[in-house]
Image (tube, rainbow, N blue to C red):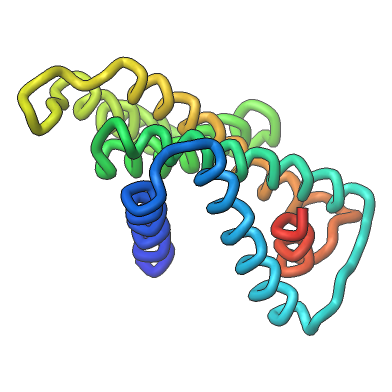
Length: 185
């Protein structure tokens, strides 16, 4: 519940920033810099003001940071073109569905009828707003908006996959140290 609340708050902050600052690349870059610095300071303090470097963690943090910046830039663009509800649905479902598929296909996590049903319900939840959605002025939603949302679905899913792969890697730093590296990048 708390995670859903915080994710929802994050989406509203991004939407508020987009409304206030616009959708330019400079505005998106500034957003990434501000959120990166804020996250770095918070996690650096939470990690006892320590930086811990291990090769796998440094490279995974760099990849995760690049995905995060791309998500920020594209997310601001998407929110300028469509509904925050649809945007957040794509983001959250990507963050759940792709790690599930990677777990089943590559990490040999168990597959059951209930889990398959869950994925089908997630896909239906994703398809409904895309098929039936309308903009406020009664016009059909822009294709660009849904294209951006599809990319964001994959990016958010990949960020969850990277976090999972980092967490199970035997040479990885602990989670807080990893977040320091990611936000530092």
